[in-house]
Image 1 (cartoon, rainbow, N blue to C red):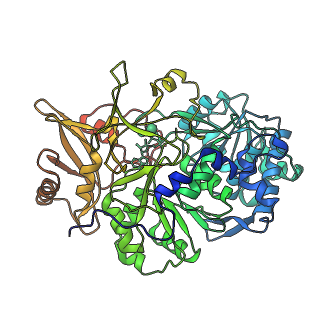
Image 2: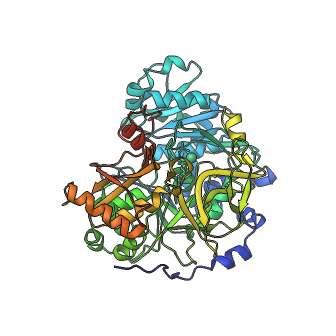
Image 3: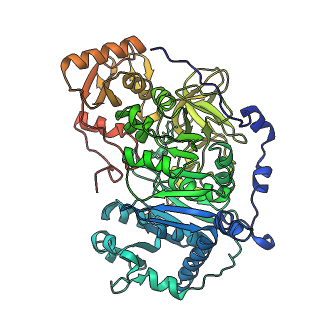
Length: 582
Ligand code: ATP
Ligand code: MG
């Protein structure tokens, strides 16, 4: 079936043009309060304290759904008191401003309290994904020069005890099961420390330039980097929550990303709280039925998820979704990977709402390119650049190559951004040279290839490292994957270039099938034929291999570099963020 090329804007959100006209960073700063007495800008003040002090105290800040069906709610006043306590407990433990506080916790309430309390103490929050094993944990603690780690007793015994000797300066605070006291000699106990700490606090002077967050990248293309963010980032978190996610005070907002990744902190903690929304937290992992039940029963207004979750839901068909009703649901968006056009249409079929793709990176700290609520969607496009940010398509600039701006529409190049927005990263910790190399002639080079159409929509082509050069063509894997998943048998596809003496590279696709389909030569032929019809013979894959599932990062991104390494029998490189690895 031919699909329309645009989806008309819905709702009453202002147009993109109106957003651009009315937006300035001065305005975005004025949406926030700043610390009382002109003492600066602190993320946690904007997220919690100002609401607790201005009449929103009784509103639910966090609604937590436990794995085993438990349910807990913290209103803004309770979150204020608890995070004050944690800040005071940190100070009592001798942890000062600028020092790094790591968390290694599942999505439990303590994680959110620790995150906000750390920021209140003006220490630096470095959240780790809780499923990491000892090695990746050690590597990140080392990069971050960790001062304190909050984790559970069970995780400590399994993952920290074996590496603890390497970190003589590190203090560990343990969260016990069911609030029971922990009993590991030489560690602090969460419950005891919290009880001993006062629940009142005046946040100390915080410069907008003070380091606030240390985020490790997903490691999709190699060894993860530690991106440094400052308190001023909150201006961006707040503004993009309103503009790009359509967040409004009182909304129930569900960001399904784990706070171990930047999305789960910027939008899974900070942004919705600054807006005065209710943050929904689900401790459990993905399960289509559970997620749909949550969307319905918790009356989620705005849902921020990832293409991989959408594709997993698509595997189950629309019936599962349509068996429930979602009258509150107003806006769905997705980030982390390109969103195939088929997924946008699937949203329309299943939820009667399109899925709004947006693009950003750990380095940018917040949403940079988005399908805004008041904009028509062009499925397959990541949208337009955020008001207040300048984007360009560029060529060259690396390793001394000549640098040029690409002005013609529809021409591929690297996506570049003009630095200056508040959540721009301030460095890769301990990797000064690598940081410097990201900038050329005043532009930040993102490492992603894209093109811009005549109307300013940006279209993702691929990561620079993943792009395939075949018989004189530059082929973005996303385009090929999107065509393949239009086929009814295909659940997911990952496309690589396999070196070839004649064509330089040939396009090879790895495909995971939907339930009810079996791999066969005939099906492979059919998929090649389908892709040829859609893309032409030059771009369509020449080879198809079936896999039960694709290798992905724990943050849900297909790891094409791993598909390629395995194909070529090369070393797999850093796989610390590989899902299912340790
Ligand atoms: P590493 O830098 O360690 O290789 P990573 O780039 O995957 O890992 P993140 O910062 O988590 O780490 O991911 C940002 C990247 O994810 C972007 O640069 C882009 O390649 C991809 N991405 C994010 N959102 C989108 C999107 N909407 N469309 C296409 N790609 C996206
Ligand atoms: Mg990256």
